[in-house]
Length: 245
Image 1: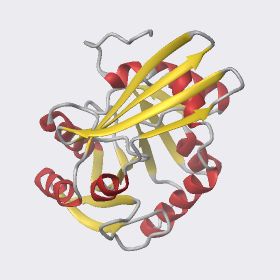
Image 2 (image 1 turned 90 degrees about the horizontal axis):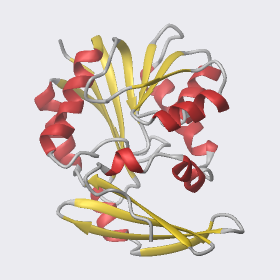
Image 3 (image 1 turned 180 degrees about the vertical axis):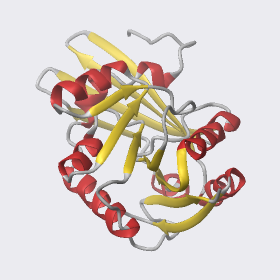
């Protein structure tokens, strides 16, 4: 089996063409639903300067762009940014680290569980400080994160799929040291390649505490993309905070 180098962080290994292939099935409807929730909740004006943080290929960035908003996408993966530039012409997609956000914005979005990647909680909290510093006065941070309790209670330890006629994918999942860890095995003929996802299982309360320590005033808490109230087994934890200074 071909293994990735262990000393390289998982998020520098995984976000490549295989990641895009595995998640290509993602429903545009879900993305459109959350975009509509963001616009309606915040009453966004067309001149709002938006940053799609950890934008990947630019799925959400493209939707906001189609609606006429000024939006920038930022992601650490050069591969995903290059794919996004090729797929969505005219988007402002840039390579960068979420812990050091360049520029200033009125709204910063962290969507599809693009938070909790780092091993140390201090590094994850550094992302919030980076967001806070990159927001204009009164700016808003929208965090779309997993619901830790729902993940713990409904975890599927193993699943398999046929990605293409040639490629099989096996995914195994476990909770270890406060993280949800997924190993993804791609098998093509007699070759295998393994990747890992590892995300910190921050609870709703831990996220709220981090927001408040950073200086955000919490505006909203949702449990799904329809804007339903958060509940212990909601599919998502969507937290919205405003910069207070």
